[in-house]
Image (cartoon, rainbow, N blue to C red; front, side):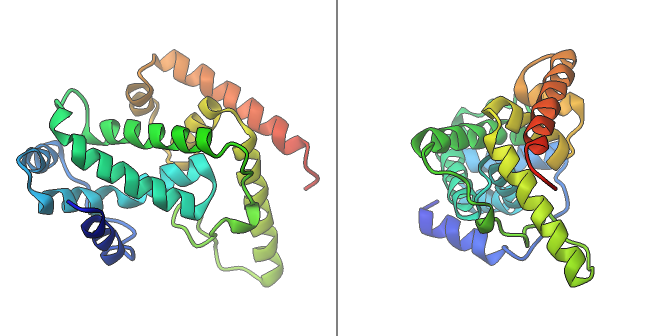
Length: 206
């Protein structure tokens, strides 16, 4: 699958906000097809996970264009390395680790560039804005910008677990599998991250 093909696939389905979740048997069949070089099967996985991947990247990076670039790069990497996937976990867990590493590499490469809250795209699906008066909408937009800016100031491990739990609403068990740590460690790390975020937010006048 070329960059152009992947980009076209993502653009074609950019308006799809939710697809029917694959069960384990369906996912395994599609991944096996990918491992045999079936680009259409990879397109199915892109459609299934594109919003999930984008939302993870956006939560880690806080910047719309960077998140899109990382998402595309992550899918290309997944396609190039799909033969290494050995079904020891869910495909989504394996894909998440690729996305995480791409985000961390991006942060390392551009750590001098500060997240600009004015560049946050409020139309993205994981930060929906309810219909409200102009005054209420402006206040909510400002609050979201403050939260995203605070997230961007946290260390990577804190930002990561907050994205998984608070923004993606994943269960503790799934987070434990993704991060390869115990449930107790997940809960203690989340507690530390929430305290760190609260501290950052307290620095701002609401």
